[in-house]
Length: 156
Image 1 (spheres, rainbow, N blue to C red):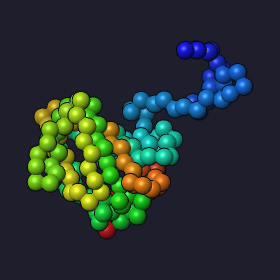
Image 2: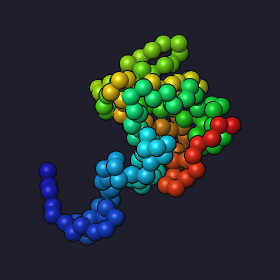
Image 3: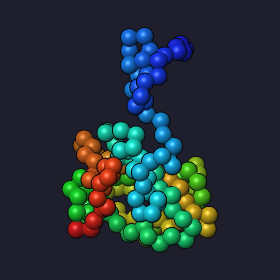
């Protein structure tokens, strides 16, 4: 393993010798949020373009996460046909999917297909997760609502 010291430049760039490193590091409290701070636009804040990713901080008992799928429940074509992976990072929640209830807590990951209705209900201590999304077999195209300064998502 070779650790080299380099020149740190603005915008997360670092020059090491003749090569330019490409990285972004941010705290979630530095990211743009929507829905009163519940959704952090992580993908756009980090400059990622190949996958969808949001960080979500649900307050205790919050009922605002809609029962939805990604086949019919969005007016944005780029939001449709996405599968999602939920990575629990704090607190707990109940994932309602396919008539069942599944506990989400740190150490638990869940994948939900595009056509599957899903709803998340945070537990008594709230719930924090990273949601990662993409279109199976296709290149990722970011929905407008995930862009910095973008509009809020709308139903069809």
